[in-house]
Length: 403
Image (spheres, rainbow, N blue to C red):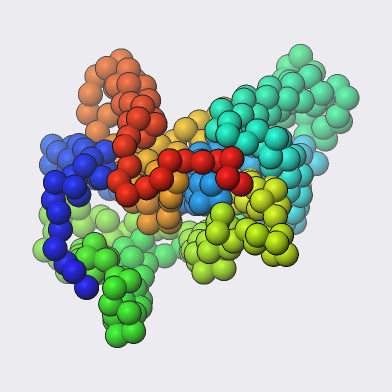
């Protein structure tokens, strides 16, 4: 294995990632320790909430379709399911099960329709998916504002606006749908990180013995770093008093298990099968159209599940806005993590998700309110300009018509 690094090329290929790393590190150094517990808790919850949505965006990229800006359709499916469950006054395990099943069915339908539409837009998938997302958002708002309460009966009268028609702007899930799920299994966040680091180190050791070329330097360095950091936080008393509170930071185990299981399922059973290379020339295994529809449908279902987990942990549904920006933030996370129009991995997604959420939670709040809002728009849109104008090394031009 060649460990030599061409630093000039490394900087060019990871330019946007390094910029955000520097911004976040500077912000961490200047951050007041009084708020470090809240910052890390917020960061972990955001990363966990957006993890599946970001992974859902990877599938169409590796299928040769570029960025799927219609990923919000999956979130809409999840929100429809939640609103219907609450309107039927379902709660507890029955309510959650009903929501998951209905969200999956709706996402399957929406994803299939989206896939069929994108099949007829070869070469223009990204711009087409953007307008599919806009159209779906318009239909979603029309149904909620004008059909619920008038054409669609609602048992839970507290959901309806004072006019008698339309759903309220916010829905409190912890006092309705998830009211009997309080106190579900939780564990200290850094204990979970400590255990995960040990497990990953064992995996690396086993993999190094069989295939050294498949292990990156970053993986070798990151695992011990996470192990040492989490060990210091959990099992020593050398940290300042204000940072020692990190021991009590907890995360829901069930949500984490579901997220990890789905990510591992994608990594080991789906990733290599949803690629242009999986299209058989004789159309015996996959056809190009079937590949497109399947990838978009899987992406939409994963996004729906991710949105359910995110809203469950948040406890509040912003009825008309919760789904609006997830595609822009998710794609931005992939770009910052090092993904391109042609290739994206789970590593790109998680790395970028941590960086973008850290930037939004740690860096921007340190600026004046109006300035931070303007800079957010400028910086996040500049990320898109960067990726669409970037010159890629050792790669062929993107040819979506090849499928």
